[in-house]
Length: 341
Image (cartoon, rainbow, N blue to C red):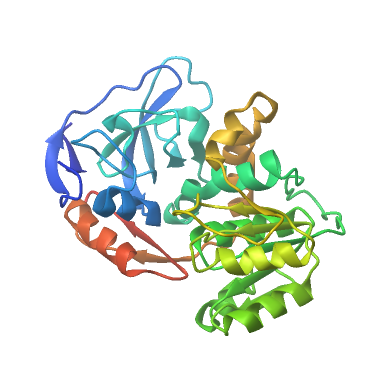
């Protein structure tokens, strides 16, 4: 059972397809025959910009899905043959956990069974950001969890999610709305129709002049929580101004500051490695809930809406093409590929 992987041999080098070992799962681990690789923008930054220090050669990639090939000791909830959507655990260190290969080892706590009849690529498109979204909104900001059982009680609180068509924004808008909060978000006109289906009470055009956009966002407030799912130097002045107009407070950001920044007086950037927040003692159980209940129930009920899936051809040889596309910028779509092509 040979295993092939797209390996990055050195910092900023093109990825090369190589034969690598086929691994054995350890305790609480699964071996997955990988059938869908889903790409996230952070991956091109690691591959092309050496955004984070890593050990080379490396097998990158954090979200994928396929069929359980083998189960390790102490695994109780999965069996050989199960279809799963998965994300690399932040605690998993080693090339066996990277998704740019045909066989991947996975922690059972970040595996989600895929309901029968569901295209595997759809739940996989959410797995990379699932822990992040739960970490921001429920673990750290204290919002209640969504529920698909019956009607959701209205909380009487309003949340701004800046960037509703981004990977994180798409899931964030739905997660918060499904929990009973009123959501305001932003989108370009080209993605407005899609974002409007996600549950927001208002979708504002982020391509308008900055001053007009800030004014429009403030007019929809005040907000009990402001989250910038883009958090780049061109968006934090906008979201920071909204928080400042409310008298200051926390601006929850997907990313850390890219350098020295000047936020308005009284506004502080709230950033953490959001997925790892779920490892704090008070938040234990949230990740399990997200992968074993929220994601499968959302797709089984048809209440989770994914971005448009865009297939990148070429299998593992096409991974470089996918990273090139991410670097150029994609909007409103999720790039995926099949490592067996």
